Image (cartoon, rainbow, N blue to C red; front, top):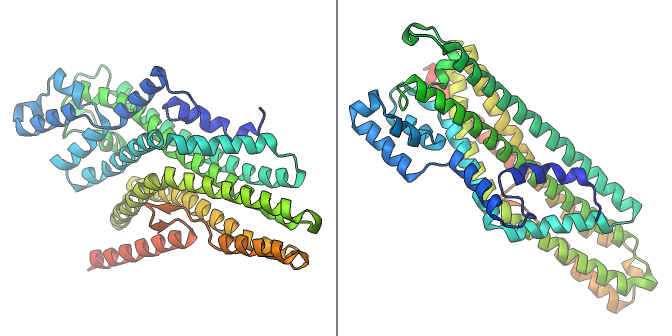
Length: 416
C-alpha cells in the first residue's frame, strides 16, 4: 500500500522511539521503550521517600550517599523537591517550575496514547487508506496542500527541538569539562547559566550533580521529542481531516440529478465516517490538550511575571530565558488552536457546499435527504480541552488577553 509518506513517517519514527506509535504491534521491546521514557520523566515512590529523608536528615542533605543519589536521579522528582525545599531563593525555585511542568506534560503524553491506542489506530489507518485509495486529482491536490502545511509545521517543531536540546547538551558538556580536574571547586567562578542549572538543594556533591546533568540531558531529549512530536502529530491528523471535509464538499458539488440517490448515500456514509474520525481524535487528545492548556496558562503567568522583574533589574540572560519560554508556549498553543479552528470551519463549510448543489432539481423524496445533511453539517465539529474548552482562535485570543491583563496588574503592583 502506498501513500504520501512524508505526512506520517516522521511521526512514526519519533513515536516509535518512545513506544506509543499506535500501528506498532504490542511487544516486550515496545513496552520496554515506553517504560524507559516514563522512568526518565516521572518520579518513583522510592525517589520521593529518599527526597523526604534528604530533607529531614541534615547529614543526608549535606553529604548524600551514593545510594541516595541513585534514586534521586529522577528528573521530575528532583524538580519538585527543589521547589519544596526552597533553599536557594525564589528565582532558583521559579527556574525549576518550567522543566518540572514539561516533565509532567511528557508523562501525560506517554500515558494517554496507550489508553486511547484503539482510537488512534483507527484514525491513522483511515489516513493511510485515504492516501492509498484516492484517485481524483482535485481531491489529491487539496490533500497535498494540507499535507504540505503539516510538513512545514513538523519541520519547524523539530527544528525547535534540535535547538533547545542542542543548547542544553552543549551547556551540560561545558559544565562537566570545565570542572574536570579542578581540586578547588568552591573557588571556581561559574557562569550564570551554570549556576542556574545546578540543583544544590538536592545535590550537594559535584559527582551527583554531574550524574544528574547526564540524566537531565536524556530527559530533555525525550521531553522535546514527546512535546513537539505529539503536537505535530495532532496537527497533521487535524489537517488531514480538514482535507477530507473539503473533499466531501467537492463530492457534493459534483452531484448529478440522474445519480443523486447513489451519490447522496455515498456522501452520507463518508460524512458519518469523518464524524467518527473526528470523535476519535477528540477522545484521544482532549486530556492531553487540557493538561497542556492548564500548564501553559500557569507558566505564562509565572514566566511573564519573571520577565517583568527581569526587565526592571535589567537582567539580560533572565530576559532572554523567560521571553523564549513564553514564545515557545505561545507557538505550541497556536498550533492546537489553529488546528481546532480550521477543523471547525471546514466541517461547518460542508453545510454551505450542500446548499450550493442542485438540490432544487432533485425529486422531492431525494431532496428531503439533503435537508438532513444540512441539519447535521450545520453543527461544526470542535476539538476541545477536557471536553469543555473549545480549542479555536477565539480561545487563543482570550488566553492572551487574560494573561496580558494579569501581567499588567502585576506590573502596576511592582511599580508601586
